[in-house]
Length: 219
Image: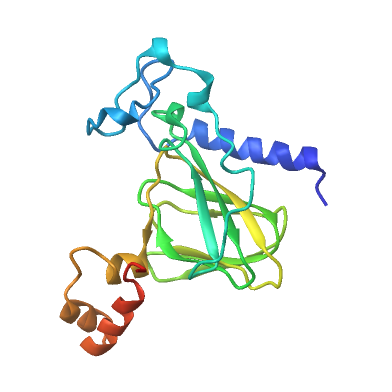
């Protein structure tokens, strides 16, 4: 079993690997802290005045504690990306913590702008991704294990154990983006027409309506 020091070194090595092989454009200055309140829309965020930059722009405690998993899927993703750490703007790296209740699922989804690599903090998980040839690549993970999900491919994580599980996920993008397949197809606004989904999934419009009802905002 890895010692705490070995675990920390593995995590830091993973993060620095992503920094050195970033998918985002290279930065052109020492720093470009995101000026989030500006409202200006560009590919990334405009830079905050360097004179106003502080250590708080590069710091977060958001991943320190387990997230609440009492939701539909029994899992919660807590991000540490440019939206919560503005100093990550142009650095091409971010993290997330994912917590899973027993039986919890991070449902099939993609990250269109990043490869993901996870390090299991606690518990066990069954994970996998699907290639464009519809081949499933899957693996059972335990504490201390690492697994990578290639950029843009559909993937999932499931806690089939009887105790909670958690991972730290690293991405080679400041904002990797997430498209959950179920929510994207059946919960979009405006909605995808029922007949499109019925034909695509070879089912009835009634079944599509029933599935859509599961993805409506909770009132």
